[in-house]
Length: 311
Length: 256
View 1 (tube, rainbow over the protein chains, first blue to last red):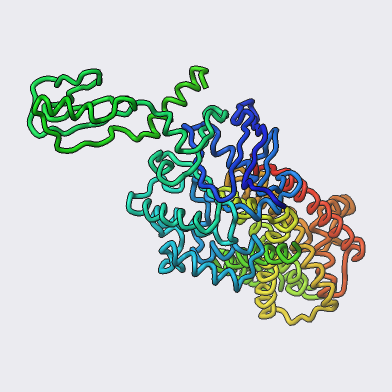
View 2: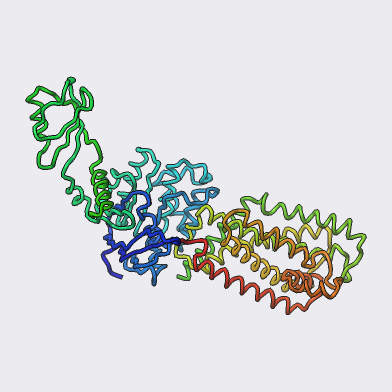
Protein backbone atom coordinates (compact mmCIF):
# COMPACT_ATOMS: atom_id res chain seq x y z
CA UNK A 1 0.00 0.00 0.00
CA UNK A 2 1.88 3.10 -1.22
CA UNK A 3 0.43 6.46 -0.37
CA UNK A 4 1.89 9.67 0.94
CA UNK A 5 -1.25 10.32 2.94
CA UNK A 6 -1.76 9.22 6.51
CA UNK A 7 -5.43 10.20 6.43
CA UNK A 8 -7.84 11.04 3.65
CA UNK A 9 -11.44 12.06 4.19
CA UNK A 10 -13.74 12.34 1.18
CA UNK A 11 -17.06 14.10 1.59
CA UNK A 12 -17.41 12.76 5.15
CA UNK A 13 -20.91 13.14 6.58
CA UNK A 14 -22.63 12.30 9.84
CA UNK A 15 -26.25 12.92 10.71
CA UNK A 16 -27.31 11.71 14.15
CA UNK A 17 -30.70 10.21 14.90
CA UNK A 18 -32.98 13.16 15.36
CA UNK A 19 -31.53 14.92 12.35
CA UNK A 20 -28.54 16.77 13.82
CA UNK A 21 -25.96 17.17 11.04
CA UNK A 22 -22.65 17.03 12.92
CA UNK A 23 -20.40 16.66 9.86
CA UNK A 24 -21.53 18.08 6.53
CA UNK A 25 -19.17 16.76 3.87
CA UNK A 26 -15.57 17.21 5.03
CA UNK A 27 -12.67 16.69 2.61
CA UNK A 28 -9.31 16.48 4.33
CA UNK A 29 -5.86 15.09 3.55
CA UNK A 30 -3.10 14.71 6.15
CA UNK A 31 0.38 13.87 4.92
CA UNK A 32 2.47 11.13 6.51
CA UNK A 33 4.73 12.52 9.23
CA UNK A 34 2.62 15.66 9.64
CA UNK A 35 1.74 17.28 12.95
CA UNK A 36 -1.76 18.44 12.14
CA UNK A 37 -4.08 20.60 14.25
CA UNK A 38 -7.83 20.19 13.99
CA UNK A 39 -9.47 23.18 15.60
CA UNK A 40 -13.00 24.37 16.06
CA UNK A 41 -15.38 25.71 18.68
CA UNK A 42 -17.33 23.36 20.93
CA UNK A 43 -19.85 21.33 18.94
CA UNK A 44 -18.06 22.02 15.63
CA UNK A 45 -17.83 18.32 14.71
CA UNK A 46 -14.21 17.61 15.67
CA UNK A 47 -14.94 14.76 18.08
CA UNK A 48 -17.52 13.27 15.71
CA UNK A 49 -14.92 13.31 12.92
CA UNK A 50 -12.38 11.61 15.19
CA UNK A 51 -15.08 9.16 16.33
CA UNK A 52 -15.70 8.19 12.69
CA UNK A 53 -11.99 7.77 11.93
CA UNK A 54 -11.56 5.55 15.01
CA UNK A 55 -14.77 3.64 14.11
CA UNK A 56 -16.65 4.55 17.30
CA UNK A 57 -19.20 6.53 15.30
CA UNK A 58 -21.01 5.28 12.18
CA UNK A 59 -20.63 7.70 9.29
CA UNK A 60 -23.68 8.39 7.15
CA UNK A 61 -21.71 9.24 4.02
CA UNK A 62 -18.28 9.63 2.48
CA UNK A 63 -15.05 7.72 2.65
CA UNK A 64 -12.17 7.40 5.12
CA UNK A 65 -8.72 6.07 4.23
CA UNK A 66 -5.94 5.52 6.77
CA UNK A 67 -2.57 4.99 5.09
CA UNK A 68 -4.52 3.87 2.02
CA UNK A 69 -6.67 1.37 3.93
CA UNK A 70 -10.37 1.96 3.32
CA UNK A 71 -12.29 1.98 6.59
CA UNK A 72 -15.26 0.23 4.92
CA UNK A 73 -13.30 -2.57 3.28
CA UNK A 74 -10.06 -2.92 5.30
CA UNK A 75 -11.21 -1.91 8.75
CA UNK A 76 -8.83 -4.08 10.76
CA UNK A 77 -5.76 -2.93 8.78
CA UNK A 78 -6.83 0.68 9.19
CA UNK A 79 -7.37 0.22 12.94
CA UNK A 80 -3.89 -1.24 13.35
CA UNK A 81 -2.45 2.07 12.09
CA UNK A 82 -4.35 4.28 14.55
CA UNK A 83 -3.66 5.13 18.18
CA UNK A 84 -6.42 7.11 19.87
CA UNK A 85 -6.20 9.39 22.90
CA UNK A 86 -9.83 10.35 23.58
CA UNK A 87 -11.03 13.48 25.33
CA UNK A 88 -12.59 11.71 28.31
CA UNK A 89 -10.81 9.27 30.64
CA UNK A 90 -12.15 5.96 29.38
CA UNK A 91 -9.97 3.35 31.07
CA UNK A 92 -11.13 1.09 33.87
CA UNK A 93 -10.50 3.10 37.02
CA UNK A 94 -10.05 -0.08 39.08
CA UNK A 95 -7.26 -1.50 36.95
CA UNK A 96 -3.61 -0.55 37.31
CA UNK A 97 -1.71 1.40 34.62
CA UNK A 98 0.31 -1.73 33.87
CA UNK A 99 -2.80 -3.85 33.37
CA UNK A 100 -4.42 -1.16 31.22
CA UNK A 101 -1.53 -0.76 28.79
CA UNK A 102 -0.65 -4.48 28.60
CA UNK A 103 -4.27 -5.46 27.88
CA UNK A 104 -4.54 -2.72 25.27
CA UNK A 105 -1.45 -4.08 23.49
CA UNK A 106 -3.12 -7.49 23.52
CA UNK A 107 -6.17 -6.16 21.69
CA UNK A 108 -3.79 -5.23 18.87
CA UNK A 109 -2.15 -8.67 18.84
CA UNK A 110 1.04 -7.74 20.70
CA UNK A 111 2.23 -10.87 22.58
CA UNK A 112 2.14 -10.49 26.36
CA UNK A 113 5.92 -10.72 26.89
CA UNK A 114 6.51 -7.97 24.30
CA UNK A 115 3.65 -5.93 25.81
CA UNK A 116 5.42 -5.87 29.20
CA UNK A 117 8.62 -4.60 27.54
CA UNK A 118 6.72 -1.82 25.75
CA UNK A 119 4.76 -1.01 28.90
CA UNK A 120 8.01 -0.41 30.79
CA UNK A 121 9.32 1.78 27.95
CA UNK A 122 6.26 4.04 27.65
CA UNK A 123 5.36 4.17 31.33
CA UNK A 124 8.94 5.24 32.08
CA UNK A 125 8.98 7.79 29.26
CA UNK A 126 5.74 9.28 30.54
CA UNK A 127 6.87 9.21 34.15
CA UNK A 128 4.27 6.66 35.27
CA UNK A 129 6.46 3.66 36.05
CA UNK A 130 6.43 4.31 39.81
CA UNK A 131 2.63 4.20 39.71
CA UNK A 132 2.35 1.11 37.51
CA UNK A 133 0.68 -0.99 40.22
CA UNK A 134 -1.56 1.70 41.72
CA UNK A 135 -5.27 1.73 40.88
CA UNK A 136 -5.83 4.14 37.98
CA UNK A 137 -8.44 6.04 39.99
CA UNK A 138 -5.70 7.13 42.40
CA UNK A 139 -3.71 8.91 39.68
CA UNK A 140 -3.76 12.68 39.31
CA UNK A 141 -5.48 14.26 36.29
CA UNK A 142 -2.15 14.79 34.52
CA UNK A 143 -1.08 11.20 35.15
CA UNK A 144 -4.37 9.94 33.73
CA UNK A 145 -3.81 11.99 30.56
CA UNK A 146 -0.30 10.56 30.20
CA UNK A 147 -1.63 7.06 30.83
CA UNK A 148 -4.00 7.46 27.88
CA UNK A 149 -1.07 8.50 25.68
CA UNK A 150 0.98 5.49 26.82
CA UNK A 151 -2.00 3.22 26.15
CA UNK A 152 -2.44 4.62 22.63
CA UNK A 153 1.23 4.00 21.79
CA UNK A 154 1.43 0.36 22.91
CA UNK A 155 0.89 -1.08 19.42
CA UNK A 156 3.30 1.42 17.79
CA UNK A 157 0.65 3.21 15.70
CA UNK A 158 1.62 5.16 12.59
CA UNK A 159 -1.11 7.73 13.22
CA UNK A 160 -1.73 9.13 16.69
CA UNK A 161 -4.97 11.05 17.19
CA UNK A 162 -5.19 13.17 20.33
CA UNK A 163 -8.50 14.77 21.27
CA UNK A 164 -7.66 17.66 23.61
CA UNK A 165 -4.83 15.78 25.37
CA UNK A 166 -3.73 18.66 27.58
CA UNK A 167 -7.16 19.78 28.82
CA UNK A 168 -6.89 20.58 32.53
CA UNK A 169 -3.15 19.90 32.65
CA UNK A 170 -0.85 22.43 34.34
CA UNK A 171 1.61 24.36 32.17
CA UNK A 172 4.72 22.50 33.31
CA UNK A 173 3.21 19.15 32.53
CA UNK A 174 1.73 20.47 29.30
CA UNK A 175 5.18 21.51 28.11
CA UNK A 176 6.65 18.10 28.95
CA UNK A 177 3.83 16.48 27.00
CA UNK A 178 4.55 18.79 24.04
CA UNK A 179 8.19 17.70 24.11
CA UNK A 180 7.16 14.06 24.19
CA UNK A 181 4.75 14.49 21.28
CA UNK A 182 7.38 16.36 19.25
CA UNK A 183 9.78 13.49 19.90
CA UNK A 184 7.21 10.89 18.79
CA UNK A 185 6.49 12.97 15.67
CA UNK A 186 10.22 13.25 14.90
CA UNK A 187 10.38 9.44 15.04
CA UNK A 188 7.89 9.35 12.15
CA UNK A 189 4.48 9.10 13.82
CA UNK A 190 1.85 11.28 12.16
CA UNK A 191 -0.06 13.25 14.77
CA UNK A 192 -3.50 14.82 14.58
CA UNK A 193 -4.32 17.04 17.52
CA UNK A 194 -7.46 18.80 18.57
CA UNK A 195 -7.05 21.39 21.26
CA UNK A 196 -8.60 24.48 22.75
CA UNK A 197 -5.15 25.86 23.56
CA UNK A 198 -4.43 27.62 20.28
CA UNK A 199 -0.94 28.43 21.49
CA UNK A 200 -0.41 24.68 21.63
CA UNK A 201 -1.44 24.24 18.00
CA UNK A 202 0.74 27.18 16.91
CA UNK A 203 3.75 25.79 18.72
CA UNK A 204 3.42 22.13 17.69
CA UNK A 205 1.62 21.85 14.38
CA UNK A 206 2.79 22.38 10.82
CA UNK A 207 -0.65 22.24 9.21
CA UNK A 208 -4.07 23.14 10.45
CA UNK A 209 -7.72 22.53 9.68
CA UNK A 210 -10.50 24.58 11.20
CA UNK A 211 -13.96 23.04 11.50
CA UNK A 212 -17.10 24.98 12.30
CA UNK A 213 -20.63 23.61 12.27
CA UNK A 214 -19.51 20.44 10.52
CA UNK A 215 -17.72 22.26 7.69
CA UNK A 216 -13.98 22.59 7.13
CA UNK A 217 -13.64 26.38 6.89
CA UNK A 218 -9.84 26.42 6.50
CA UNK A 219 -7.14 23.88 5.76
CA UNK A 220 -3.64 25.14 5.17
CA UNK A 221 -0.15 25.34 6.64
CA UNK A 222 0.25 27.11 9.97
CA UNK A 223 2.68 29.53 8.32
CA UNK A 224 0.26 30.44 5.53
CA UNK A 225 -2.56 30.88 8.01
CA UNK A 226 -0.58 33.16 10.29
CA UNK A 227 0.53 35.23 7.30
CA UNK A 228 -3.14 36.12 6.81
CA UNK A 229 -3.03 38.04 10.03
CA UNK A 230 -2.72 41.69 8.97
CA UNK A 231 -3.05 43.36 12.36
CA UNK A 232 -1.74 42.58 15.82
CA UNK A 233 -2.36 44.20 19.19
CA UNK A 234 0.59 44.93 21.52
CA UNK A 235 0.57 46.02 25.13
CA UNK A 236 3.35 48.46 26.11
CA UNK A 237 4.39 49.11 29.73
CA UNK A 238 5.62 52.71 30.03
CA UNK A 239 8.35 53.85 32.41
CA UNK A 240 6.66 57.13 33.43
CA UNK A 241 2.93 57.72 33.76
CA UNK A 242 1.24 59.75 31.02
CA UNK A 243 -1.90 61.81 31.44
CA UNK A 244 -3.30 61.36 27.93
CA UNK A 245 -2.95 59.12 24.90
CA UNK A 246 0.37 59.94 23.18
CA UNK A 247 0.20 60.99 19.54
CA UNK A 248 0.86 57.85 17.46
CA UNK A 249 0.21 59.08 13.90
CA UNK A 250 -1.70 56.50 11.79
CA UNK A 251 -1.51 53.86 14.48
CA UNK A 252 -4.59 53.14 16.61
CA UNK A 253 -3.93 53.14 20.34
CA UNK A 254 -5.67 53.20 23.71
CA UNK A 255 -4.44 54.18 27.13
CA UNK A 256 -5.47 51.42 29.52
CA UNK A 257 -4.06 53.17 32.56
CA UNK A 258 -1.36 55.82 33.16
CA UNK A 259 1.52 53.41 32.40
CA UNK A 260 -0.14 50.91 30.04
CA UNK A 261 -0.63 51.62 26.37
CA UNK A 262 -2.33 49.32 23.87
CA UNK A 263 -1.59 49.71 20.13
CA UNK A 264 -3.01 48.03 17.00
CA UNK A 265 -0.24 47.68 14.45
CA UNK A 266 -0.88 46.72 10.84
CA UNK A 267 1.66 44.42 9.19
CA UNK A 268 2.64 47.23 6.74
CA UNK A 269 3.24 49.71 9.54
CA UNK A 270 5.80 47.86 11.68
CA UNK A 271 6.62 48.48 15.31
CA UNK A 272 9.34 51.06 14.59
CA UNK A 273 6.69 53.66 13.85
CA UNK A 274 5.30 53.21 17.37
CA UNK A 275 8.71 53.47 19.03
CA UNK A 276 9.70 56.49 16.92
CA UNK A 277 6.49 58.30 17.87
CA UNK A 278 6.97 57.57 21.57
CA UNK A 279 10.68 58.50 21.54
CA UNK A 280 9.83 61.88 19.97
CA UNK A 281 7.58 62.51 22.98
CA UNK A 282 10.26 61.30 25.46
CA UNK A 283 8.19 58.32 26.49
CA UNK A 284 10.25 55.24 27.33
CA UNK A 285 8.92 51.70 27.03
CA UNK A 286 9.87 49.19 29.74
CA UNK A 287 8.42 46.07 28.17
CA UNK A 288 6.06 44.87 25.46
CA UNK A 289 3.88 41.79 24.81
CA UNK A 290 1.24 40.47 22.40
CA UNK A 291 -2.22 41.12 23.77
CA UNK A 292 -3.71 37.93 22.38
CA UNK A 293 -2.47 34.79 20.78
CA UNK A 294 -2.07 35.42 17.07
CA UNK A 295 -3.75 32.20 16.08
CA UNK A 296 -6.62 32.92 18.41
CA UNK A 297 -7.35 36.17 16.56
CA UNK A 298 -7.34 34.35 13.24
CA UNK A 299 -9.47 31.55 14.61
CA UNK A 300 -12.11 33.98 15.86
CA UNK A 301 -12.05 35.83 12.51
CA UNK A 302 -12.44 32.63 10.48
CA UNK A 303 -15.25 31.30 12.64
CA UNK A 304 -17.00 34.68 12.60
CA UNK A 305 -16.66 34.79 8.80
CA UNK A 306 -18.08 31.28 8.55
CA UNK A 307 -21.07 32.32 10.65
CA UNK A 308 -21.60 35.27 8.32
CA UNK A 309 -21.36 33.01 5.29
CA UNK A 310 -18.05 34.50 4.11
CA UNK A 311 -15.96 31.36 4.41
CA UNK B 1 -4.61 -12.04 11.72
CA UNK B 2 -5.34 -15.38 13.46
CA UNK B 3 -2.49 -14.80 15.89
CA UNK B 4 -3.87 -11.35 16.63
CA UNK B 5 -7.36 -12.73 17.26
CA UNK B 6 -6.06 -15.34 19.70
CA UNK B 7 -3.96 -12.80 21.63
CA UNK B 8 -6.92 -10.37 21.71
CA UNK B 9 -9.22 -13.15 22.99
CA UNK B 10 -6.67 -14.12 25.65
CA UNK B 11 -6.31 -10.47 26.72
CA UNK B 12 -10.07 -10.05 27.21
CA UNK B 13 -10.22 -13.33 29.12
CA UNK B 14 -7.30 -12.40 31.39
CA UNK B 15 -8.89 -8.99 32.00
CA UNK B 16 -12.16 -10.68 32.97
CA UNK B 17 -10.58 -13.29 35.24
CA UNK B 18 -8.47 -10.58 36.90
CA UNK B 19 -11.64 -8.57 37.48
CA UNK B 20 -13.69 -11.25 39.21
CA UNK B 21 -10.79 -12.61 41.25
CA UNK B 22 -9.87 -9.06 42.39
CA UNK B 23 -13.36 -8.73 43.88
CA UNK B 24 -13.58 -12.34 45.10
CA UNK B 25 -15.46 -11.26 48.23
CA UNK B 26 -18.30 -10.16 45.97
CA UNK B 27 -18.03 -12.87 43.32
CA UNK B 28 -16.71 -16.15 44.77
CA UNK B 29 -17.47 -16.08 48.48
CA UNK B 30 -21.26 -15.36 48.46
CA UNK B 31 -22.23 -18.46 46.41
CA UNK B 32 -20.19 -20.66 48.78
CA UNK B 33 -22.00 -19.22 51.82
CA UNK B 34 -25.45 -19.26 50.17
CA UNK B 35 -25.08 -22.85 49.01
CA UNK B 36 -23.83 -23.97 52.43
CA UNK B 37 -27.04 -22.52 53.89
CA UNK B 38 -29.14 -24.27 51.23
CA UNK B 39 -27.50 -27.60 52.07
CA UNK B 40 -27.91 -27.05 55.79
CA UNK B 41 -31.51 -25.87 55.73
CA UNK B 42 -33.11 -27.56 52.72
CA UNK B 43 -30.85 -30.57 52.49
CA UNK B 44 -30.26 -31.39 56.12
CA UNK B 45 -33.09 -29.98 58.24
CA UNK B 46 -36.00 -30.06 55.79
CA UNK B 47 -34.62 -32.88 53.65
CA UNK B 48 -34.40 -35.31 56.56
CA UNK B 49 -38.19 -35.04 56.93
CA UNK B 50 -38.86 -35.37 53.19
CA UNK B 51 -37.00 -38.63 52.80
CA UNK B 52 -35.87 -40.03 49.45
CA UNK B 53 -36.59 -38.45 46.08
CA UNK B 54 -35.97 -40.25 42.81
CA UNK B 55 -34.45 -43.11 44.74
CA UNK B 56 -31.73 -41.03 46.44
CA UNK B 57 -31.60 -38.92 49.62
CA UNK B 58 -33.09 -35.44 49.27
CA UNK B 59 -29.67 -33.89 49.95
CA UNK B 60 -28.18 -35.90 47.08
CA UNK B 61 -31.15 -35.00 44.86
CA UNK B 62 -30.80 -31.23 45.24
CA UNK B 63 -26.99 -31.08 45.04
CA UNK B 64 -26.70 -31.08 41.18
CA UNK B 65 -29.48 -28.48 40.92
CA UNK B 66 -27.82 -26.21 43.46
CA UNK B 67 -24.50 -26.47 41.63
CA UNK B 68 -26.22 -25.65 38.35
CA UNK B 69 -28.14 -22.77 39.94
CA UNK B 70 -24.90 -21.12 41.07
CA UNK B 71 -23.29 -21.70 37.66
CA UNK B 72 -26.26 -20.07 35.90
CA UNK B 73 -26.47 -16.98 38.10
CA UNK B 74 -22.71 -16.37 38.18
CA UNK B 75 -22.15 -16.84 34.45
CA UNK B 76 -24.99 -14.46 33.73
CA UNK B 77 -24.19 -11.77 36.26
CA UNK B 78 -20.46 -11.77 35.47
CA UNK B 79 -20.94 -10.81 31.83
CA UNK B 80 -23.95 -8.58 32.46
CA UNK B 81 -22.16 -6.46 35.06
CA UNK B 82 -18.70 -6.47 33.44
CA UNK B 83 -19.91 -5.68 29.92
CA UNK B 84 -22.35 -3.05 31.11
CA UNK B 85 -19.70 -1.40 33.34
CA UNK B 86 -17.29 -1.34 30.39
CA UNK B 87 -20.00 0.22 28.25
CA UNK B 88 -21.08 2.68 30.97
CA UNK B 89 -17.52 3.80 31.82
CA UNK B 90 -16.67 3.73 28.12
CA UNK B 91 -13.64 1.48 28.58
CA UNK B 92 -15.28 -0.88 26.08
CA UNK B 93 -13.96 1.66 23.56
CA UNK B 94 -10.49 0.22 24.23
CA UNK B 95 -11.66 -2.90 22.41
CA UNK B 96 -13.97 -1.21 19.92
CA UNK B 97 -11.15 0.94 18.45
CA UNK B 98 -8.82 -2.07 18.22
CA UNK B 99 -8.81 -4.58 15.33
CA UNK B 100 -10.81 -7.07 17.41
CA UNK B 101 -13.58 -8.76 15.38
CA UNK B 102 -17.02 -8.83 16.96
CA UNK B 103 -16.94 -12.60 17.44
CA UNK B 104 -13.67 -12.35 19.38
CA UNK B 105 -15.13 -9.63 21.61
CA UNK B 106 -18.20 -11.80 22.34
CA UNK B 107 -16.08 -14.93 22.83
CA UNK B 108 -13.75 -13.11 25.24
CA UNK B 109 -16.52 -11.81 27.48
CA UNK B 110 -18.47 -15.09 27.34
CA UNK B 111 -15.30 -17.04 28.21
CA UNK B 112 -14.89 -14.73 31.22
CA UNK B 113 -18.44 -15.53 32.32
CA UNK B 114 -17.87 -19.27 31.77
CA UNK B 115 -14.62 -19.09 33.77
CA UNK B 116 -16.45 -17.56 36.74
CA UNK B 117 -19.41 -19.93 36.37
CA UNK B 118 -17.15 -22.99 36.33
CA UNK B 119 -15.02 -21.75 39.23
CA UNK B 120 -18.11 -21.07 41.34
CA UNK B 121 -19.53 -24.46 40.25
CA UNK B 122 -16.33 -26.11 41.46
CA UNK B 123 -16.48 -24.24 44.79
CA UNK B 124 -20.12 -25.26 45.32
CA UNK B 125 -19.27 -28.87 44.38
CA UNK B 126 -16.55 -28.86 47.04
CA UNK B 127 -19.05 -27.46 49.57
CA UNK B 128 -21.56 -30.15 48.54
CA UNK B 129 -18.98 -32.86 49.17
CA UNK B 130 -19.06 -31.94 52.87
CA UNK B 131 -22.74 -32.92 52.92
CA UNK B 132 -23.08 -35.58 50.22
CA UNK B 133 -20.83 -38.41 49.19
CA UNK B 134 -21.44 -38.57 45.47
CA UNK B 135 -19.54 -39.63 42.38
CA UNK B 136 -20.66 -38.39 38.91
CA UNK B 137 -22.15 -41.31 36.95
CA UNK B 138 -21.31 -39.68 33.61
CA UNK B 139 -18.43 -37.21 34.18
CA UNK B 140 -18.10 -36.19 30.51
CA UNK B 141 -21.80 -35.36 30.34
CA UNK B 142 -21.47 -33.31 33.52
CA UNK B 143 -18.60 -31.30 32.01
CA UNK B 144 -20.33 -30.76 28.63
CA UNK B 145 -23.61 -29.73 30.28
CA UNK B 146 -22.10 -27.32 32.76
CA UNK B 147 -19.94 -25.76 30.04
CA UNK B 148 -22.83 -25.29 27.57
CA UNK B 149 -25.19 -23.99 30.26
CA UNK B 150 -22.59 -21.55 31.50
CA UNK B 151 -22.00 -20.34 27.95
CA UNK B 152 -25.72 -19.99 27.32
CA UNK B 153 -26.26 -17.77 30.36
CA UNK B 154 -23.07 -15.79 29.75
CA UNK B 155 -24.48 -14.97 26.31
CA UNK B 156 -27.76 -14.00 27.97
CA UNK B 157 -25.88 -11.67 30.31
CA UNK B 158 -24.10 -10.03 27.38
CA UNK B 159 -27.37 -9.45 25.52
CA UNK B 160 -28.88 -7.98 28.69
CA UNK B 161 -25.88 -5.62 29.02
CA UNK B 162 -26.12 -4.50 25.40
CA UNK B 163 -29.69 -3.31 25.95
CA UNK B 164 -29.17 -2.00 29.50
CA UNK B 165 -29.09 1.75 30.03
CA UNK B 166 -28.66 1.73 33.80
CA UNK B 167 -27.43 -0.64 36.51
CA UNK B 168 -31.10 -1.31 37.38
CA UNK B 169 -31.56 -2.84 33.93
CA UNK B 170 -28.99 -5.54 34.61
CA UNK B 171 -30.66 -6.62 37.84
CA UNK B 172 -34.23 -6.80 36.49
CA UNK B 173 -33.72 -9.95 34.37
CA UNK B 174 -31.91 -11.96 37.10
CA UNK B 175 -34.54 -10.97 39.68
CA UNK B 176 -37.72 -11.33 37.67
CA UNK B 177 -36.79 -13.95 35.06
CA UNK B 178 -33.69 -15.93 36.00
CA UNK B 179 -34.50 -16.63 39.66
CA UNK B 180 -38.10 -17.83 39.05
CA UNK B 181 -37.00 -19.99 36.11
CA UNK B 182 -34.25 -21.56 38.21
CA UNK B 183 -36.43 -22.19 41.28
CA UNK B 184 -39.16 -23.64 39.05
CA UNK B 185 -36.60 -25.62 37.05
CA UNK B 186 -36.68 -28.68 39.27
CA UNK B 187 -33.81 -27.85 41.62
CA UNK B 188 -35.80 -28.79 44.72
CA UNK B 189 -38.30 -31.30 43.34
CA UNK B 190 -38.67 -34.05 40.79
CA UNK B 191 -40.86 -33.19 37.81
CA UNK B 192 -42.57 -36.56 38.25
CA UNK B 193 -44.27 -35.11 41.35
CA UNK B 194 -46.09 -32.49 39.22
CA UNK B 195 -49.60 -32.94 37.80
CA UNK B 196 -49.70 -33.24 33.97
CA UNK B 197 -50.66 -29.62 33.41
CA UNK B 198 -47.77 -28.21 35.45
CA UNK B 199 -45.41 -30.79 34.03
CA UNK B 200 -46.20 -29.51 30.52
CA UNK B 201 -45.84 -25.91 31.67
CA UNK B 202 -42.47 -26.77 33.21
CA UNK B 203 -41.29 -28.13 29.88
CA UNK B 204 -41.45 -24.57 28.51
CA UNK B 205 -38.76 -23.61 31.01
CA UNK B 206 -35.30 -24.10 29.43
CA UNK B 207 -33.64 -24.38 32.86
CA UNK B 208 -35.57 -27.62 33.44
CA UNK B 209 -33.57 -29.32 30.66
CA UNK B 210 -30.22 -28.10 31.99
CA UNK B 211 -30.86 -29.29 35.53
CA UNK B 212 -32.36 -32.52 34.21
CA UNK B 213 -29.34 -33.50 32.12
CA UNK B 214 -26.90 -32.30 34.78
CA UNK B 215 -28.64 -34.40 37.42
CA UNK B 216 -28.51 -37.36 35.04
CA UNK B 217 -24.75 -36.86 34.73
CA UNK B 218 -24.38 -36.99 38.51
CA UNK B 219 -27.03 -39.44 39.65
CA UNK B 220 -27.81 -41.47 36.53
CA UNK B 221 -31.56 -40.78 36.32
CA UNK B 222 -33.58 -38.10 34.51
CA UNK B 223 -37.18 -36.88 34.22
CA UNK B 224 -36.81 -35.94 30.53
CA UNK B 225 -34.82 -37.45 27.65
CA UNK B 226 -31.13 -36.52 27.97
CA UNK B 227 -30.53 -36.20 24.23
CA UNK B 228 -33.53 -33.87 23.88
CA UNK B 229 -32.26 -31.80 26.81
CA UNK B 230 -28.81 -31.47 25.25
CA UNK B 231 -30.37 -30.59 21.91
CA UNK B 232 -32.43 -27.81 23.48
CA UNK B 233 -29.40 -26.40 25.31
CA UNK B 234 -27.45 -26.46 22.02
CA UNK B 235 -30.23 -24.70 20.11
CA UNK B 236 -30.42 -21.97 22.78
CA UNK B 237 -26.63 -21.51 22.65
CA UNK B 238 -26.64 -21.11 18.87
CA UNK B 239 -29.67 -18.79 18.95
CA UNK B 240 -28.25 -16.52 21.66
CA UNK B 241 -24.83 -16.44 19.97
CA UNK B 242 -26.52 -15.34 16.73
CA UNK B 243 -28.48 -12.64 18.54
CA UNK B 244 -25.41 -11.39 20.44
CA UNK B 245 -23.40 -11.26 17.21
CA UNK B 246 -26.16 -9.35 15.42
CA UNK B 247 -26.41 -6.78 18.23
CA UNK B 248 -22.67 -6.24 18.63
CA UNK B 249 -21.93 -6.12 14.91
CA UNK B 250 -24.70 -3.57 14.38
CA UNK B 251 -23.24 -1.56 17.24
CA UNK B 252 -26.61 -1.44 19.01
CA UNK B 253 -26.09 0.36 22.30
CA UNK B 254 -22.34 0.52 21.63
CA UNK B 255 -21.76 2.90 18.71
CA UNK B 256 -23.61 6.07 17.72
